[in-house]
Image (cartoon, rainbow, N blue to C red; front, side, top):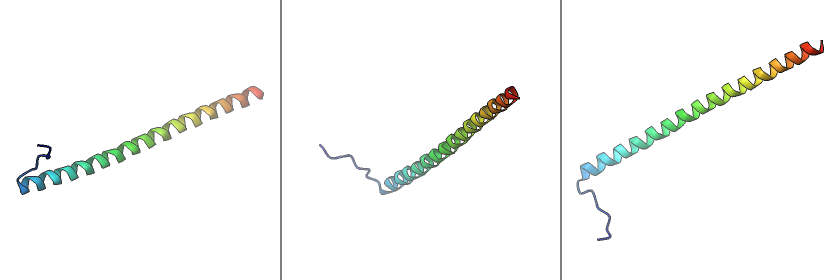
Length: 65
């Protein structure tokens, strides 16, 4: 009774294996898409920080003149 249940039908086993491989590929693709979104957000945040620093630098320059 400790044996794992087997899928008796070869065709069903092949179909389930194919579906599993397809699902794995879709998850990997989704992971890559998330990484691209994350990279884009990080770039946007860096640009915002750079712009804020530039504004502070300009304000300091105006004050000292």
